[in-house]
Length: 212
Image 1 (cartoon, rainbow, N blue to C red):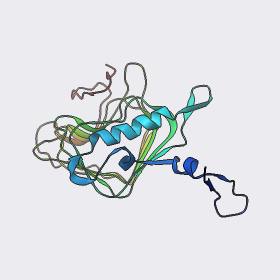
Image 2: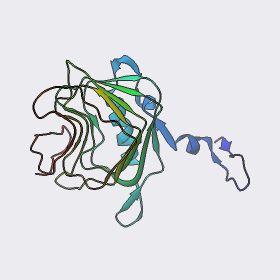
Image 3: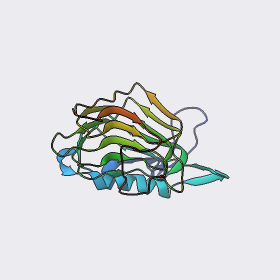
């Protein structure tokens, strides 16, 4: 295997393969980012890969050394992205100003039900006016797992969502750092942000059972 030695005093030699595996791109899983191709599955597959990399250095303390990168581009999303049921302390997803063009009518664009320890940074989510999603981001507990300790940094929503841009249906600690949750949809019971521990708005997940 080809070795890699970072610059600087005290740097430790590793392999190029190990270094490259510290980051995965959604494009490694087939995302195109041309605004035409449906990239939903690629985003879900990248998440599944991170779940497979989880380690347990201490009891009840899963970690991963893998980060997900979303390169600049416009990614069409026709189906809800499955970022559910992952319990960790350091799941990092960084977007370089990437835009999700969301056409997943009636669904969450990013479904984070039952996930803990996610840090999402720098993503823009646009809700389509015709194929309008229910929300941009959905967080909350599932029957077997609570949800919390998630952080969203510099995440922005634009466009239309039938219920809310951000929906928190009972998630524990959720941090918002310089985010902009906007919703252009007009109607009764339509919001930019919902915090609702009883899910009276009837959000659903394609991938997990939401705790009643």
